Length: 144
Image (cartoon, rainbow, N blue to C red; front, side, top):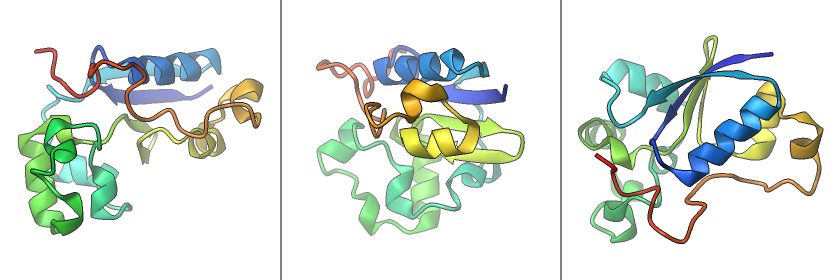
């Protein structure tokens, strides 16, 4: 079906579920490590530009949860600089198919974009597969 470049945090249970859903719908994935990818302001901003600045951030990141970083108070320039310096802050996954990019994994949006199959399209599917899927902090703490 569709070839997707999927930027993830390796070991994140939420990203694992997202990838499984995409593959089960027949899509092929090129998986990249979001935390180690050599982002430039231009390449990262290409994903983020359509969204309000607060939606650029991973709400499970320790600096966000603790209140040390308040995305709602940041300018786009300052937010982009923070995300480039600390990729753990980036809302994930980042996905690209052709020239179309998406931030996060809201099931209905992803289904409308590339299709997720009958089960995911049903009203029984979770509205969002974002965030940590486990009670441990496996999605916010770097495994490096």
